[in-house]
Image 1 (spheres, rainbow, N blue to C red):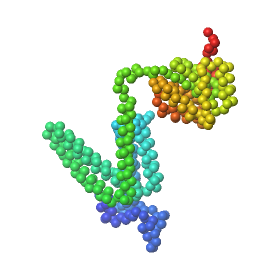
Image 2: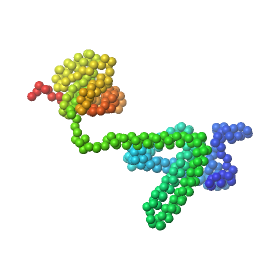
Image 3: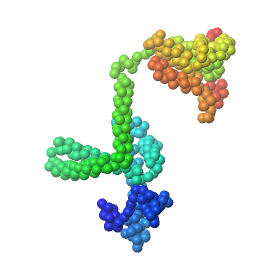
Image 4: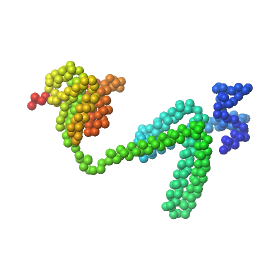
Length: 386
């Protein structure tokens, strides 16, 4: 209000497009012209004889804006944590970081702010349209919420002093609700077509998203709930072990040894035949090293690896629905991150397909490439011994 009064008394002029609307000798001033903010113009006019006060007003205004921006980074992470606790936002927003701050909420707010700044080219005139609707909706709903709060508390409060205090507070909040509500209606009428509709659309999308998140968490909770104590003791009828083998090397032998140590009811090694020569060599090595696990060769006319294995595992499940199938996948553990691109791509594709198959468990058997064979290989005992 003070700014409005001072602006009228001093004759401050401010236009939305100064490069086009300000004229110099009958010509637009152009993009090089910089329009000073209202507060800056007021300070320069009022304190024309005391320049230090002009700079003081400018610095204080900057500090106020910094504190106003910091308010969102203080409030939103806490609000996001509460909503995440109530399962209306992702649970990651409820966890604290190393410095006991809600780091995920801060990062999320930062990303959103950067998106808005880039999308609107950091133009305050365009961004204010989003702000003004959001802030008055917040003011109006919060005042209405406080009116409901005092009304609910008055039903159970019998102390005259406390009731009088609550009634005064309710009147104050009711007046605030009416005033902010009137301003909100005016803002919606005058600012919606100027960009405020984006805020309303984002609010609707956020509301529907929060409902969807809550529905997901509620459905997940119902599916994960243990309703019968017998479920905690239930065991599969049998366990089928399947070791995926591309060739007979140390990672494959390590996976076979680990699978045997788990003692499944049945255990077999599965190889997808891509090349006939490789199959012949693998069979010869299998017999030479006396691997104590039967070898199954899957035909792949189209030289695919993933589909034959998925179909084979699905067939095991179909033949024995009450049984558990454990797929052991040998994986290389490389030293450098960039080396990961050169390995384990087939394993990742298989995991992606088998992950959604009920009754199937995937067991990754790591093999550290930077260690010696003596340190990593679990020896396969000779079945002819003892």
